[in-house]
Image (cartoon, rainbow, N blue to C red; front, side, top):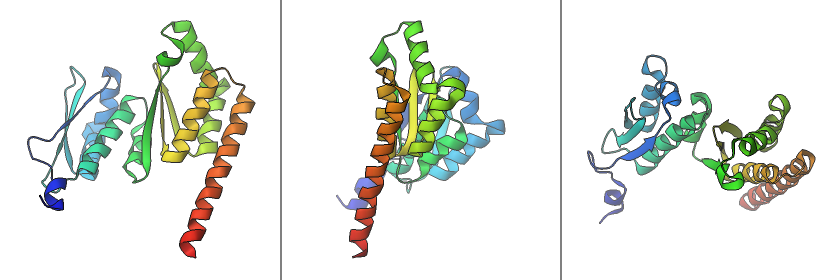
Length: 200
């Protein structure tokens, strides 16, 4: 089997499924279907949305659609499902961007008052804590229902994820910000070294 054949998707057979909450379906479709249309165009896919069940089917639009394009389309659908605006979700179409999901119930159980308290710590007064995490890591953070979703490059998204986990554990905000500062500094230094090696 050639490399070309391996990468080829089977029309009418290859499909990915995703589930979108009822209150996010309208956001995914967009005004007059504009968001869905743009996503299909940019990923060369066909997206079918069942408004009753929230089931989303993603299929290749042509034999030249790649598996990566299919997965990128699914990532965007998933990001919108977890509360991101389409503008922020479309960032996942960039090559190095990932989507990370934290299920708060896995950390604090399903008692509403525990979940509310933890969400309050992550958001901060007037959204301050979330904004600081986003600015320091260069990521996007969404808190939707019992989930925290993060969009960013692999390293930055993982730094933001650990920072949020530290807040869930009850660490002080100042301690968490120091952690982010240290990790982003080390990451920048690593990238600079890598860049320097490539130049030499």
